[in-house]
Image (cartoon, rainbow, N blue to C red):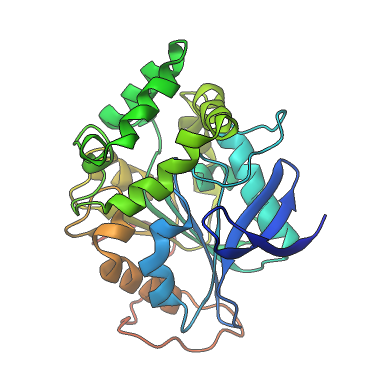
Length: 314
């Protein structure tokens, strides 16, 4: 198993790493700053984090694995476990293989990072959960219910994905348009859904997640969240309809040392709607919760006393 350069379908060279389920591409900005791993959701890839990566890279080493959630360019092995728990294990394996330590793990949309708590969280120093599936909100919103209905019908997932051939359908409120306030560029929609529309292996991997992820998996994971005593930030889209802010507040209450904040002018894809505000919150969070040996971060973060043992709502 090797780590090396790989050429993605679009002709962009990215590092590649071989994991137990198959090879995945990833971004790595390099550097010796605090390590931040940004995790995308179902039907997205590393590009969903582009603005946040650009803003963090002067002071952080930022990595973004392209997980096998539909928009990946390399199909997984036919026997790979691609349930939410399987994806969480791949994320842990990714951090193990690259020997990433004291990671600030940032999750959006699909809530798989929560499944590492109390199971494989030894490399996580700080946890950031932005609008994502949690507790009893799975499948989430009307988009989740449509996907859940499609996966139960023969050929349903294939038929549903055909909508993404047409940007005006993808931008509907019952689809991607309900996840962001900004109008999504046609090229991004094509990038995210091109692999699903052209590769039956990608559709197989995508459908595996839908069919193998149990409805109660995030509710069960919540039982372990009180065990995570390291710093946590729950940063929710203030106008999120798919992942309601009430879910984020409940999530923060379960984490012993958490701060809850709402990102203004943002829905589920907070990193697209308001990357500046999200980046500032991540910087502030890391600055307020330093680790031994970490250098001082630049930026507008303000020091604030921590109150261990309670969540903080702002």
